[in-house]
Image (cartoon, rainbow, N blue to C red; front, side):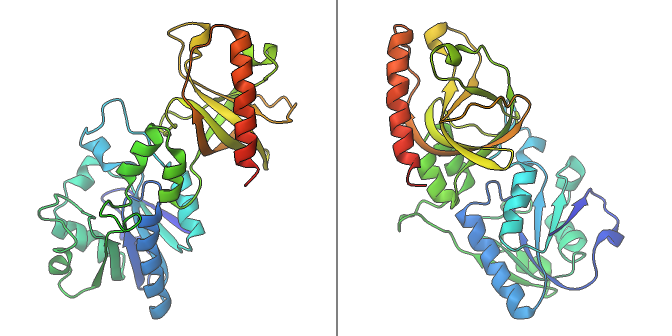
Length: 314
């Protein structure tokens, strides 16, 4: 898959010659709704024997519009998004830097300078996709701006279990934040994952008989809500089963910073400095303050039993 990074205004020499079918969207998480958009675009690309391209952005547009206090937490970072798009059979990605100058384009300028310059023969997007202010940059209005230069295909809302609630990034973020990773995985269409670096912790788990790895995650990645989870961890190309605690270690004191500690089953290696991938399968319980180490260890044994049972089905 070819990735072309675009900064406004861009040099048109960057754009390959030849027509394309273009799917567009921010695609945070590349969930089942996004997959439906890309699948429709892929069908058209195969019918027309054209490359399948995607127009997407390097960060959330709301960052420019100051919509997020404390920064934005992504379901998929840029690298993860590109990985997912590659798995879906995309040939070319236009990765646009969403800047103030780009945001100042009118809908007509966006169509003329981008969609037309990209040689789009067909443009595909979800029913609620916008390319500016919603009232003047909706999918319903895109054919007017296209003026016959390309076909417009709008993919309808994908709903869950026949309900009217759409499968959407906002809804999935809420599920992740509340610890409902199984439901989030169902809407994503794959198991949610994060990345991180194994760092030194306080080594309390070792003294309790549950040695853990402490994973420091990038600030822009969205961690599941506080609690204990059944997970798998990829280290050096191999996956290991375990259980993860996202929390503040409240048994040993108040005011501790948020940490991610993972106990890997039947694992004895020293892995400080390793870059790892964590897949989140099931929420086991919330964070609880125990009377002492003995009560904590008893609970961790129950957690391990529950996690092993869940992960045995993978």
